[in-house]
Length: 117
Image 1 (cartoon, helix red, strand yellow):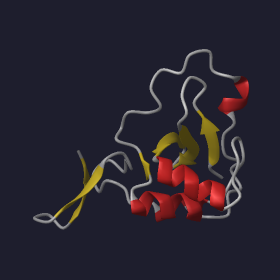
Image 2 (spheres, rainbow, N blue to C red):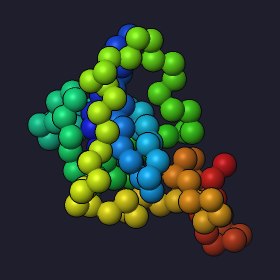
Image 3 (cartoon, rainbow, N blue to C red):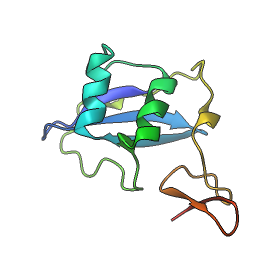
Image 4 (cartoon, rainbow, N blue to C red):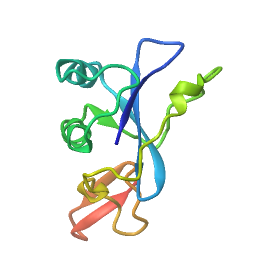
């Protein structure tokens, strides 16, 4: 299940999750973090993948292929990852038709499938 984390050195939040066996970092917009708070999700808490997908669909959770950036002095509690028994399928996230990455995917109108940039 996804886990909400706060950057140590700034007032921003991100989510770590595992998709297709890879750890993926989603940055959150301020609105995305607010939606998690309204749903009762606090820092360091796990939450359902469907909620992360809702944030992803609205653009409030995004990858841009950049990761979280340099995290100075990472707290060991920030290294909490998903459990393999996540009840919601990873396949709800669209992925590149060529390499299966979820980073920066876009629809190719001419080819009629998703590609990563």
